[in-house]
Amino acid sequence: MAAAHTPRESARAAALGAREALGGSFAAISQWERELGKLRVLVNVGELGAEEREFPEDEWYPVHEFPEIADSLHERWAGGEPHAWVETAEGPYAEGRRDAGPYNHQRVAALRRRGRSCCVVAPIVLHGRAWGELYVARRLGEPLFVRADADFATVLAAVTAAGIAQTERLAEARRLAFTDALTGLANRRAVDLRLDEALARHRRDGSVVSLVVCDLNGLKAVNDSRGHAVGDRLLERFGSVLSLCGAILPGALAARLGGDEFCLLSVGPSSDEVVKVAGELCARAGELDLGDGVAVGVASTGDRIGPVRTARRLFRLADAAQYRAKADLSGEPVVAGRHGGPDDPVVRLADSPESPQGPERRRFRR
Image 1 (cartoon, rainbow, N blue to C red):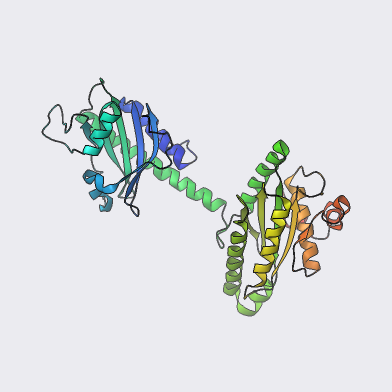
Image 2: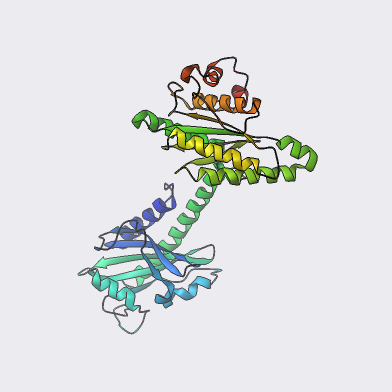
């Protein structure tokens, strides 16, 4: 679990480890979704039944079908954890006796249907609350689980909880590392990584990669006249507009590069589709009650801009187009390569070592 990079990988590692440790033929990790009243299966490993999938998209069970654990959903476990228990395909079981232990007819029916003799169920407690459960089963003909196995499963569930907590912390750290704190959009680091991946795909299969760079007009005037809190509100509102427009393009990444600079990164849609969205962005930004609209530049491998081998060149092209839009007070996006291809003034500006728009100063320190 320590080597896992995603919650899914972490859950799979836990299930595989528990299955091996308990000598089971099958294991699953499920999570309780309190707001929906469901026990959702995250992963199944081992010998799967006909209807089971390793990563099921929609395998879940209503909480009310599991009274033996549903009560713990609202318990807070200050010390220790609820203990694991054993169930068999024949019914209640405890150390060879049929006079103790919880019994759930849904679980028993599932054991019989899937050719399994028994299972051990261990609640997973995270941050003092029941998070889900660890489930390990054995096939017919194998020895039944006993009390010692349930004790061991309780320990394994605690280890699983620690691993899940670590994965969640790492996921949150990654989210913060790639997210702009003010707007909730992606940040420059996320754009750099995604753009490198996009251009690798472009070189591999010719996918169109487009970059829309935006400079929010009037932010300094808002900050100077109405205060930085109002300026932040303008940045947040424009961030929402950018996100809404970006949603028109499947898989587009909306980001704040820093200060009053934003961008959209699109992979796949044609340059015409991206330019249309950029035009919508200009129109909506002009309707905001703060600021003075936005200057937008577009650079796309779908246009005649010459070869794009590096992220640096695509950024320079989009930046040069945005610089021209700002200089001309344009209410529409300026698109690199649309007026003369390689001889387009924007393309020449971007490729000139004396380019005045300043991308070298602001961005390209890679």
